[in-house]
Image (tube, rainbow, N blue to C red; front, side, top):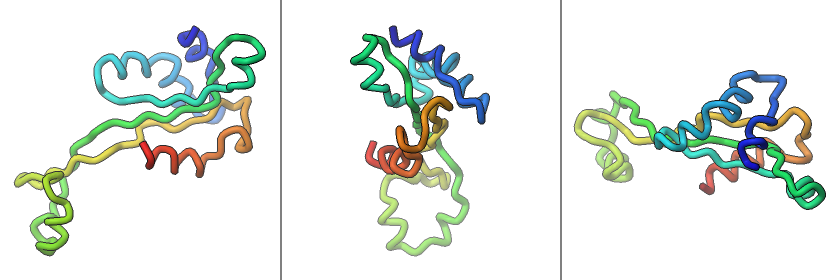
Amino acid sequence: MWRDALSLFCCNTDDDITDFINRKAVEYEKRDKCRTYIYFDENYLQETGKLKIIGYFSIAMKTIKVPIIDTMSNILRKKLGNISDREQNLVVFLIGQLGRDTRYTQDDLDGKKNCWRIVMV
């Protein structure tokens, strides 16, 4: 049921968005490369008993090098706490994908509100 929903998702404005959810999302999830959060059309589910994806976003953990850590004030370094190490690496969240099916509008899934939902995850 959900695999059908993944394969039917289409974003005509960005082939990478479509390709990710159609082919890569499940594999990335299994390999712990990222987590994908999906918004389903509740009305469509109630009417048909089938899942239809409105949009989705994926989040991954990444390490980035921040060469300016040595130049930061002690206060700022303390605020960063244990999220940085001696090699000047910083663990961050990366929004890997963010997309909405072309058949839906901003009224169905607003991009700005979706970004706030991502922050809340």
